[in-house]
Length: 461
Image (cartoon, rainbow, N blue to C red; front, side, top):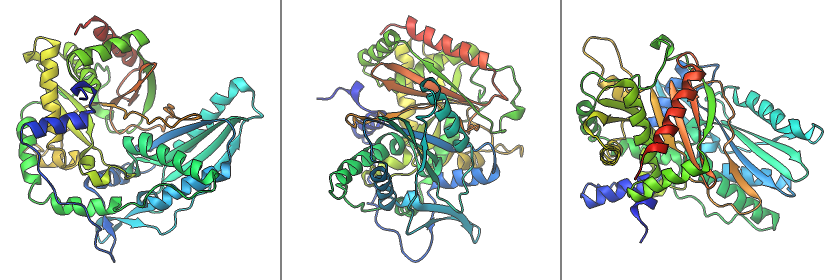
């Protein structure tokens, strides 16, 4: 039997719910009523409204996904493979606008996109990587027009005769981690192999689409929203310690939207040690990383509670949506009582329960929750956390010569003051910090990362 330490956090939490009798069974998702525009999902609506609030540069929600191909490549077949994905998934041929005061999705019947193609073989070999990053960064920094679309911009770069990169600039409203690192590359490779051999796509037609989920979600959440708000009202009661990371700057620029990226890496030895801690404590890697980060912040703050944010796969609870491209994540707040737990293993158990409870109450978008819980003094919604953390979903084995790479292409924006994204690779744990330079100095970021790695070096299972 697969050990609990090997389960994903979502499966681990489902196991907890089953064992405690806390799983409720929602009705299956069917097709939405036809003849009228579809609503946005709850989290899509929050992204849409915030994008309107911060329209222009820097774009807050632009992402870049990179698929690398080594060996000979037929670019026309690859383009056809990409467009088959767009035909298959309505989310990637959808635009968003406001009608009669309500945000709606407009699904377009045709979303065919032509690749921008760049050949860098004429550039010196040592400069090609830098030039590719420069060109792609320029594209990722360009805002999307949500009311027009498409919300995808693919660029095929030929690095050499047998090295190609397909860079995809995409708006987050139609993509999440599972979409970017699992569904999209798997479908692209499956289509390419089939089309190159003269066969049709091997992928079955989808039974539902993202807009169907959005309509279903709004129908099913009726009556449960107040219960979840009550949970968060109790969880987030009192004076919240929201700073969460050493900073010399005041909070006045917290909403400027500016962002930079700083990559980091654990050594192979440290990565092995952290995984071993996870295995011996029968935990997941994410929970160990989360608990370690909370411990370091607790040492900075010297307060009992630490607040961190993470991305809950709230929309992925239903099996029908697991193969859909789209955005199904909702930020949730984790309030960890670090002062009450004297050992790392005790705090880890506390973190596990906190994460499980948070993801059992993760349907209400965090912006809506902030408004619902705003103070009586008229000060408006308050932020729940300044630091968010996540662990990137594992990438599938695409087979040689294909791979999905995590390339640090900056959009110039950041939706949160500071966001740590960990990536677990066979050669070691790597990651990146996306931060607001109006709030944090790069030297402070580097120092805090060193403290985090030093903490993991010193803990024992």
